[in-house]
Image 1 (cartoon, rainbow, N blue to C red):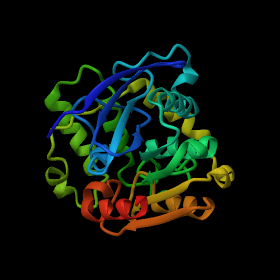
Image 2: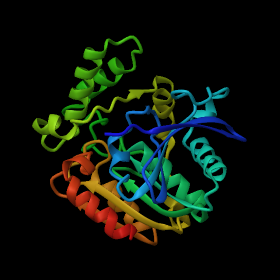
Image 3: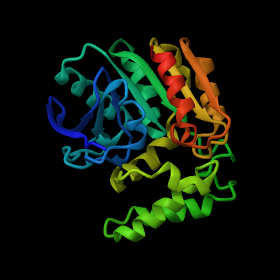
Length: 279
């Protein structure tokens, strides 16, 4: 598997580390608190067969600029940063694809800059705070696996974790969000390594408490593809259904044998749906 090419992009809002791979129409991908590197990303790899993918490290992540002010870690600032990166690359518009918190950034992108988007792909995501309002969410105290997920998240924030310990904890955390956890090794077989930005995750933990753009979804004026696993424990499927009802040009695809990772759990079907809608 070839590595991703690393770019350092200077914009009016700072310098950003971007990893590029593939040929074709441009697709921008990021996540609110993941740190990417040359090994890539499982979600991003889904799109490289037909597209040129730009995988962005946001502020305070990897070799991108550090945040000088707390608000620079917000979802709104992430969208503003992505817009400047698009301009530097010279694209009048591109597709944005986001999984989980990446999808929450995507919703804000669509609300504020639909004219910059050819299309919007939202996977296992939400347009509002989802933890407190659904006991189907693993981050809700009413969920049976809530306590263990919290323990794992806190442990993974530690910067000095040894590789094998981090891998074991990360595996257990991910298995909590798989429809068939016994298939973990099959799904995550590539040599892709990612870290979590503790600063960004801590900021998100507060920001998501007041996150709700459902009343603004009519402002999304680009073709929107919403995909979700029927058994998603992170962003339960009802939040994807809600977005599909409130965004005018939206199509909804529910994967019956998936939890939070339909692009791995039902990879063939996921790629087929995305390709058919994008083309």
